[in-house]
Length: 427
Ligand code: DOR
Ligand code: ZN
Image (tube, rainbow, N blue to C red; front, side):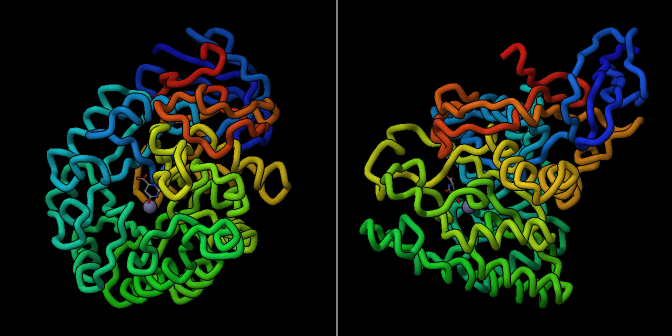
């Protein structure tokens, strides 16, 4: 048996222990109170925190079609640097992932590269055109566990009803980007005081909430596994809370940027702050934090959306929506919840690993840190102050909204099935 020891680690930020990994089969072999000194390789983790490898339900890796902004390889490396061992890459590529062979190609490329498990998300409608459903059943046999037209909303209620029924029949997840496009034409900012002052066309909360309300009722009546992408408003939180109270099976995600930033960032007119749904107001941010804390929102997902500088360093209303997230999300979540004292590292493990793995039924992710479990792990230093510089990120793009911001938590090491996929000391 070839072995790797992670000595002197604190699982979930709790007591110090030592982990022995069987690297041949990628499984945790043993956990003991004394360091493993005769392992083939040993890393002294200096009392850092050990978490199950993070799982991101929502990223855009841009391959196929926009490999100039991100590829499955560069996105996998960004993911590993961010502590992730599995990501779900959205279907809004060129071509759209609307056929089984395209989904298979994404999965196989990710596996061949090998630094992160990259699961393809299939589109709900062909070409994201919102007219005809894709072959949900066929794609569900080609590594697709989740379907989404993300970037676009399935606006047509009759089509959405059919999608829910098919998704139920094939026991897959439907993830909705909730935006009534008729209410957001030309909008580039949250509809509120800031947009009014800056002269930007606003996207009202109701454009999201009306779709969320409709979809919740549809899920109540037609069943299935409905997931809401990037919840962004206080009203959405109230609707989700009502739905869960009724026993309706909906799940939801929130992005790090909606947890930390508000539309006041737009005062700079910096295109890096343009995102869909837009940054909202403080009361939304607070409601989203509370919702994640009490389980109304299930998970954090980054919506990692790389764009080239030609699409970001332009007038605000011409900037493409989207922000990088993979390499900063753990730092943001640690700052908002752990450093503030709102929650502990167990909570971080839950919302960034266990819960997403559970929702997507990944058997080998989000598992307890215990002997016999897969060695998908991430080591985090909670006190390594670092500053974000877009140009230094692994991502091919550099459109981070956190440029020059300092954070405390930093990923030191990521392991996928016992193999090191990121090591801060050699990067
Ligand atoms: O800001 C966003 N960017 N929101 C989306 O829904 C899509 C994404 C993208 O693909 O760039
Ligand atoms: Zn979206």
